[in-house]
Length: 352
Image (cartoon, rainbow, N blue to C red):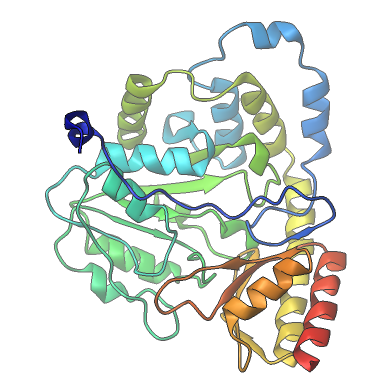
């Protein structure tokens, strides 16, 4: 090994879902919303000029922060924004997880958590989900350097009751507890109701799922004014201009259209519940997902084999080659037409 290679920070990177380049595929592998953003986003885009691109954006992203605070009836000082929830979560890991004690997150969960922990040299432990893929709250009673988990969890879609989240908070009042609510708008109950009660709680959400804006990369967090201030201190020490002007303006437009959010969310939930029934008739079993995806396994057909067959047909779903879940597929909820095409293929394939 060359001497300078000893000083390179080496990590195993996160592997995102495949982004197919060929046209006319059915893309059900990255949990994107199948519907376009609010019409108000397009109107805001039309109002942008080259002058708005010539200057640096507002480093505080004040327009977006204020719009989020208004929509969720909180104070702007309790809102933090970043380049997608991944950026927000990474800032949270960097800011709050600095103890020598291990942080805790589930063994089956969002696979970026262990990447950030390795990158920032944060020790961690992963309490296992139970046989129903549920988080066992008692596993988080032990001494730790912080807690983070998605609710609903990913890739399982299983929601933790709000009472259990509060129980974890009550047993961890000396560390920061982060609840990652990327999928909360599709049927879960947000932990925002607990914010005023627990000053160590941080809630992270995103525009990528229910707001139909994965391509704009907008994430945000709610927390006490003190936690948000510390996050901003780290952000401004790392990159003062994390949010571009287009993301700030279009995000503010999107968050103000709550009626459109409810309409698209209702369509996805209806399609999801129908999908549970259709797939059950084909021999699949799945978790009771409250997200915009299903986590399914078939009684006779191996998941990897089915994943490859679907891909060859131009239908992309997500397969995780990991312990305990290597016979499951995660299927994003698409439009009714996309899901019907999925059912047709599965009927023919499984019949053969």
